[in-house]
Length: 121
Image (cartoon, rainbow, N blue to C red):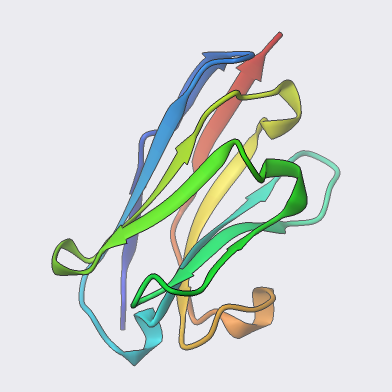
């Protein structure tokens, strides 16, 4: 099995920045895709960004395009989410996920425990 450990969450003011990191315990076919989901109170968990191993295919949800950047370091088995120009609506629990393909929630095989991001106005 693959264990995912997130770090980098915390509090920021609107317009500020945070960088999330997620490291996988091992590299397998099921870490071919690594990405980030978030869930705010009373809302469904939504995919934020995802990236394939080679970096050539990247996904962003429309609401974060131009503000967030996803990248990965395969040697370190780590995926990053650089969050700039944060908005209060970005407040959520952020979860790292890994799977064979980048898709919906059901396509991912492994999940981290989550890291809280809180953005104040």
